[in-house]
Image (cartoon, rainbow, N blue to C red; front, side):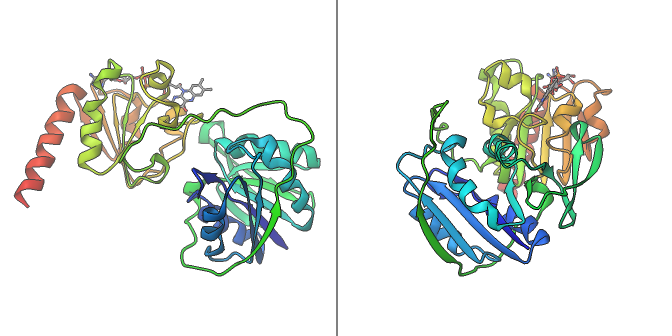
Length: 316
Ligand SMILES: Cc1cc2nc3c(=O)[nH]c(=O)nc-3n(C[C@H](O)[C@H](O)[C@H](O)COP(=O)(O)OP(=O)(O)OC[C@H]3O[C@@H](n4cnc5c(N)ncnc54)[C@H](O)[C@@H]3O)c2cc1C
């Protein structure tokens, strides 16, 4: 058995979640290869060649490949998959679009958002926003799966994979174009990888109040997140949304301020190690999930918390 891991490229660099996908792939097959498709990807290929557990890196490079375009990536991937028993990637906005499409073209079933590999053909995945777990058996010769990053510890260490380069294969026709808008520059950690996340919910009354949560995030070296209504209201970009239709995170500390705790939000953060809820309603559902709860007005509690952290920092 051999697994092919699709590695995403972001801003010319290898996305860190490939290491989690590699961990899942190594549970499916003895041999694991990695494939990258992009434009001017030398830096990402050099990073991929050092990945542990990886035998060969296939690099498809083409000037036409727009980052995030499933149509541009698809033909190169399809040219490789027939040699494999598994096609694996980390769940992401891109692979949510790309992998079902590949499975449909190949006429095979897929399992998305896998959280456990129980056997090379058997996988566990959440249903109903994480309220039920399904054990899924894939019986096709090629098993297509995306894996939840937070469920697999990243492989660590350094390898020395062989690199095989190909020109990227251009799609016969294109139905879509991708417009990439660079995210605002920030010194905060990436939400998916942050050890601390401070999330605001609709308890935050206006976009101009975000400095309230940003101050706490910065004091803790954390990322800023939001519930979906704040994204829908345009208070903050969609890349900050946590939940069923946003990002799934599992930081060491997740602070949810003014978040009620609806199941669609919980689905994105319930695996966090420590959850702190700040909410003015003592009956808010979020408290059922919280390790620590603070009942009160976030506009008073967060500044008090920040002041206390600053006092602690200056006295130590
Ligand atoms: C298909 C589908 C997918 C969805 N996907 C997502 C998703 O990915 N992520 C997501 O977040 N939601 C998602 N939702 C929306 C979800 O159902 C909830 O509507 C949303 O999570 C509620 O956000 P909230 O907790 O910020 O707002 P609310 O539910 O309005 O809660 C606001 C909370 O703030 C508290 N509060 C108010 N003022 C203060 C104050 N001054 N200080 C402290 N607390 C205060 C209130 O007591 C309340 O508990 C989805 C919904 C659907 C149908």
